[in-house]
Image (cartoon, rainbow, N blue to C red; front, side, top):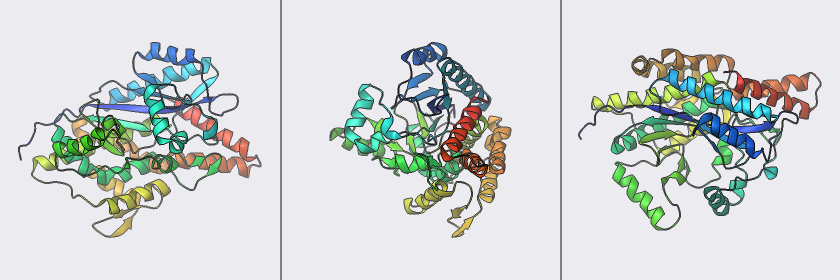
Length: 378
């Protein structure tokens, strides 16, 4: 097998935000059209509407350093927050809203979204969820497919660090990432399929396209997929993070993991492929517990504390973090364990308010206030 030249490993990040009314703290079902127009003028192609009108998406340009990524995300968050505030609104970078009702949300009137709503019906109407997508540039298509198969092992590790969706419709779901449960109602989601080449992937894709089921690979909503728009491998499993530093840490780790896997291949080695049955067990544990209860080490056949797994992962990618100059950014993952993910902080805020004698509606509004503040703290 010939080895391609080292990929560029450029990086871009997309974040989806909910838009809340600063007075009621609920989602705004119909934000003013002027707000999106102002965002588009301010961010010049880096912002777009999402499936629901109560959502907005921003995306960085192609970046070469994690410091660039942070600056671009910070600038986009500031712009959206500033413009939204003039309309009495605010963005929250959380994957679910603490108490909004999905039945009250309205769809963005665009052809793609209308087709999705028509095809998917009830599950599509429940998509009041936001995520973070990380694109890493890998020009060689066969290498993209090879790294996708190997990187699937680490998807639960990245999800666990990002969890920000413990509530749904005002209820504590008991899951740190309820977003995953909602998204898994759709077809063509979950762990990526494993292929031996890009050609094999394309042959499978063409079956679905030829049958008229999908138009292109953008309707494969796997946790990790080859992008249809860019020569990138797109991470999709993670919740969106209110704290900007958490988002940058997770994106940095993902980028470094891909380079680590490339280095293995360069040395005629590879990460072992594990069955979907095993990786899905860790995916469930990350969805249910976040970083709290550990993941299964398949080699040991035992549950290992997440802190131990994180240290192993950071050791694996230390050379790559040095290569990209992002040692500080990946080190921030340890701080996430120390203070908890957004899911932990949301649950703690709600509990503290209830313990202080406030009613549940007030406690959940306090969670929204926390999310507004964290999202804007850039």
